[in-house]
Length: 517
Image: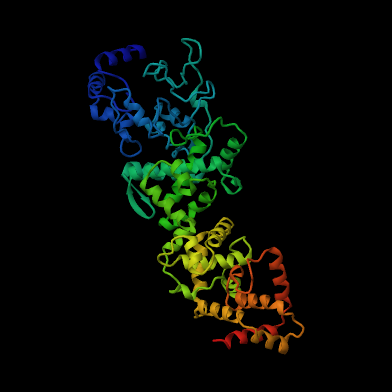
């Protein structure tokens, strides 16, 4: 029989041949059994229904309802009528393997070559049919795709084509994937997982990596395939943002390499090891108003395993305020926290972690310790708890979080180390002593006569501010020595005076404060 006669016999005996290679109806299977003598179950395994539940999700597809295809296709990566192929396999067996139709099949593990996805003669995917479901060229090993004019078909000899040698990692990935589809289980994060869950996680993570590669602002640290995708996007060769969740890259080699990258992450020994492998990719995600999780949610196919992985990778990047909510308050009392962290503790634990001014970071560290206390749920409340203006808390937090040079988890760890070395003292008491000194003059007169002759009485405000910021570790804006909020000029005068104090003069001032206890 000619292909036309065979198609006519099948059509007459079947109720519908719609979606024949995806989900044939029972009536169609019976008609094929009558023609071929093959059992219906065996015929079903000759269609993509064979992979349903593992490499495909065809649930909801009804051959009698054409609109149902949209629901299934909306899940993405649904094989069409076309196929990939290995020229050497085709020459040896003259048969088209069913797995070649799957987007996740990219390598011939027997010949260790990438599959070919497009005919060089007609620039179309192989086995691209017109309106029929049987190739008009029959079983011949030529392309046979429609080639423009009516009745003409591409005559490219498929067995003469040359496929590229596959990377060893891609061959290994394909072998693991094929084994999982046969055995029904795969190892993900060190635990056995059913093949369907493994496939969904692999596809979801692959889609995410493709989107990151397309929009990353620093692709120089990415693999070559990712840099090529990024370059194509930046040069404008991609007309619009690719919807990788619906269709993967057509080039089997590119598709294979990104699948291999995703498979290596899923195959890590545990979730934390996988998160470390994903971390460089997570760092390349652009900053958007929706935040990290918002961007990922818009560019990843929903999947439980992939979501757990993303959350584990994001944990160190969570907002600092969220990270502070999860730790125990250290120190236990708000009175034990100064308005500004002492300079020596900043130099030991926090230096280099933030690009803001040193004084701002020291204040921010104190705000963070206050924020860790129950009931202190905003930066403004943290500032009030330490006796600062609420606006200082909000503005300082905004400045420091936007210029952070490390992930929040590391900053929090450094804060906890710092807090454990804070002196055991009530800083509110020390602040009150400075206020008491500001109201009297005898101690100042004695200090001038014994340690700094010639100092003018107006300099008392600078001395009180020095005691407030250095000894009591208060914020300069709340100094009782300043008649009003210090402007830039007032701060400059104070810094000049503070730099002129000798070590003996500083020691004498500290003793004067201690004598008021």
